[in-house]
Image (cartoon, rainbow, N blue to C red; front, side, top):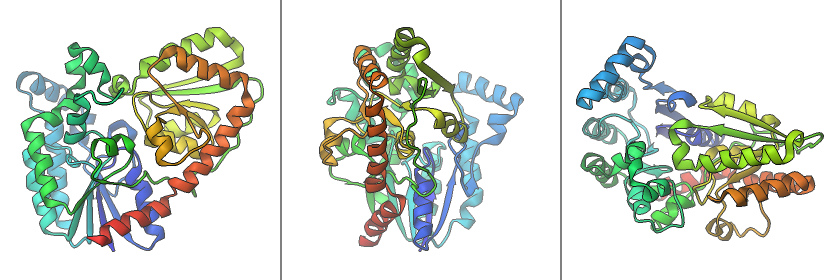
Length: 376
């Protein structure tokens, strides 16, 4: 089959592409590569003029401040429009989000209408923020979510502009348009399955052939890696990790090493955490994000989402990662236990790799997608 994957935010579509290619399918990815993360795509709609030219960046900022016009969005849409003649006769089109083209909603609808018409079956993958996800989280039904900081402090509304835009009429209409034109919606982890229980969950694919397992070797000190994404720090609960790290450094001194990075491209990010034993991923989630899964595949002990819903779904009897709660004392206690019990670190790392191989193997996951796509 010929398969077109639209959008890339986490390397999910790249790993899915690799799995599908192993099964002899032809796969193309079109997207921006997600800003500084620079994920590989076959057709790039990255807005290079309004993100790399200083004069145009300044102009765009001025226009946005005065008139709320964002020329980056327009450039993405125009670049996609130029690619449309090449995006024909695919058996499957999958959007990584209702806003996968990342342009103005009215422009997205125009482009998607043509894309749907010139291809066969289309699907929507919910693997991040989208209209029904934000609607659900705003209700405060969960103990915590990426919107917890906003629910606790309404003064943070401006900081959550990206999330809240999905509740605006134009983005809501875009989501409804996509829903009417796709054959099925798929969700990628439990954070989205809880919000959309009627939809099929297919776990994130991880290329376990490319990622080597590295048994943890603990000698003089325990190394903790903490990669910060400034644009999503509030939503991920980054401050809890920051406070916990400060306490751990004072408590253990030379017994621990801390590797920090901010807004690192994907290739840099995965290189930096290779020497770590513990990876601090995110707090305000119930299941693991993509970076967490890749770290687990390497045998790292990852602090991330691992709530009871996750444990029950996969029938786990032992920890494959550490559930990161929004509680600094709890995080300090968990880190302290692992620093003082290196054999437990090694054991969790081995179980983490085994879990990824069993539940997230990229070829097995590609087969699950094919089964869903072919069932319609």
